[in-house]
Length: 320
Length: 320
Image (tube, rainbow over all chains, first blue to last red; front, side):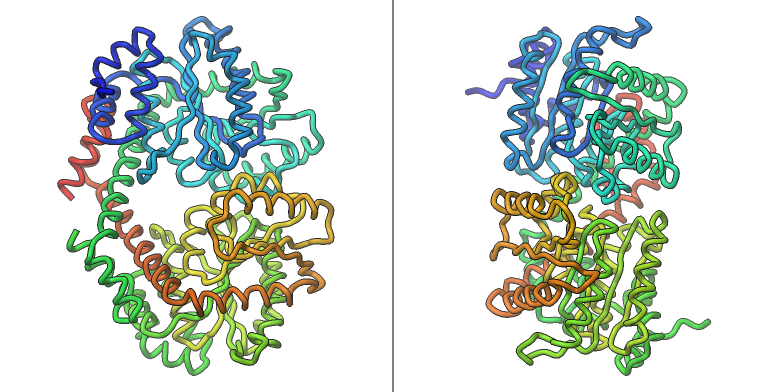
């Protein structure tokens, strides 16, 4: 199979070809020259509105996304100023080899939309290259934007460094929790506070709702630096209860970041884009170093107690 | 106050001065020339045996450490081959401003030992410099080693990047869970599997023990790459139940890493030491870049849509 040129594929994707779109996203996952050309062209178009949804497996992110898609297609931005008629969904689960079953189930549920011309769903995987998804997901968002998608939902699991990197590509990040999750949230507090623009307690008909809301409020009292303070909403995604209110809160946040905070938001995003790439390029340089003879020599000197790690690192960086 | 020279302080610390030891650890927390000289001298001594304990606040890590100290002082390595008569404890909680109360309570409980000449306890904090604790904790471990401590316990919260960095400095890492924590563990699965050599279900007299053990076994079935497979132990730290068995499991793991896996273990640790420092130095270089005019220019070009982040990063790195 001959690799098709990114510009041709972008033209086809914009004209509605899902095959072309899927190929372009494979390019940005895989790295190499096609990735660079794809990205270079995609960043010329304006970015879509990006909604991040993050939370552990089983929190109900996919069911919630499903409901939000329905609401977004039906109601747009409520005031008629925006119709969201092309919706992308990117699903990221670095641990998916372990939870293949659950993911598959969620994806199948989402297929209702996949038969729908307005929705494009894609699970993203690392192709083994360093920092892969931290870049591939933001790049795929840009590809969707260039292909005419006005909204992209990005589902991630947890709040590790990679997820925080990915969240920095979102305009509005929704953290999905469930009743009874005090301990789980406590352990990830710093990460949650960093990324969350909106908290959702999904499965709000379950026991422990009041305690979880109280824990979240306390966490926000003590630690949030966000302005405005992230609201805490309640949903039952399986019935759709609360999902319209959630979409309203998302649209409200969007007004803020595309309105009075627009310039600052765009600056912050540009810095995040640049820092992500810088960080991955620099890590790649370290990995190259680690393959070299000089690195092996320094490790041997460390094992022998002949140097300390600072001196060893300086020696390597001076040679890099 | 005149800053005392690291070599003098190290001599005093080795002779038993806790004031000198505390000063040296402040040096490695603070960065600067005293840090470098301290580290350079400390890495000349052999490293102590390092036991990592990680788990969310409230899991009972401090109470467990307390019990393990008693057992270690009383039983050594059981077979008489090692007496552990100087025990260090480093407590790391990046979110401590939020949980000051709980930490303080734990520290006070630990003071039983603090009056004991055999135990040195220290809470470590970032002093605001980039990647601080990722380096300061491994450096403090080396300082304790140089001062004659044969075992160091390191308590951390969660499994973010910093904690994984710190865990790479431990010989044996114990992940502390409680009954009923299926969801919390699920969210951090990848991180937990990466660091855990031993799992403990503390507060094992509470409801949900069987489900938590089943969840852990499943997680290990699907995802562990450790050899041997991490055992799952049960403790009730408040009464001491199970803590001797836990210490036996730790000693067993120690035999492995100092025995048949010794060379490989030492290589892995030297690489981890080097990579931690490389990574922090490189991050510092990016932060320097981000203060420069060239960086501001590239951000402006990104905002204007005149470049893409890859091109911008390459331009900056070429100038760095």
